[in-house]
Length: 358
Image (tube, rainbow, N blue to C red; front, side):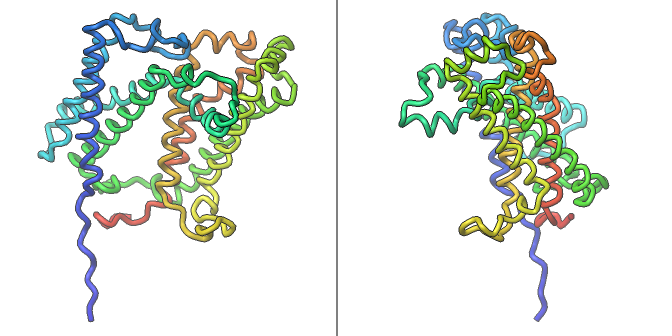
């Protein structure tokens, strides 16, 4: 009996849905921005942000200019996504670059500029809010936490990720790369598993160290040590209970640092034996790559917002104080985590079932 190789798998329908989904999502929010332009209500950023929007670059755009600007950007991106959903022949190089450049720029704005630090804060506080809600702790008004401005930030992040995925699939389809894995005929040595293991270790080490440095200050404040804070400020944090919120953020950052190390450790590839029901089984690649990629984007967005905030530079009275110095490392944290995640993907993706490369 002779065995024949399985035929290449067709392009996944899941990837084909990205462009239509992005077009629908962006079109919906583009119409909402157009409605805000007409009615003068509903735009949640800048002077209309109930929390001030101090960590948002959008505060620099007048509230009467931003809605029509977003309407044009979003509706234009929806049209671009629709154009990418058509499995047509490769367009001319200038048109291909122009379409990908415009859609890619809008995706960056939606994922990095709009969310700012509030989305990262939501992720950090989420465990405390979920666990403590039945017990009335922390004593916060949830209506002040889950605002329309926060919902729009999360929606922008979702739309930006959908659009980025659509651009990636379309770029592969119209180029020489495999639609499934992205490999082409000009694969470079630095993307090999062995090379990715080398530079990925450095990236993962840096990406794990930075949140640990940040966590050390928050843990110190919870212990009554005012690293970078005046005695009055530390007392105010203790009296308001905010120091315990900082402790929660420090714990969240510590867990994140440990999980980051999993990108280069054996237990990040196979579940430890003590994990019930999963011990010894391979860790699904997407189980590590998707959350790490999301955190990369959110951290980068928070970095942009923090560095653009005057309040951040005034915190502690000195930009090199222990209060702010850990966050000054955040511009390195996002790229390092992104590289570590990509290296993990390169090491574990294996041979492509569609094109056979690898």
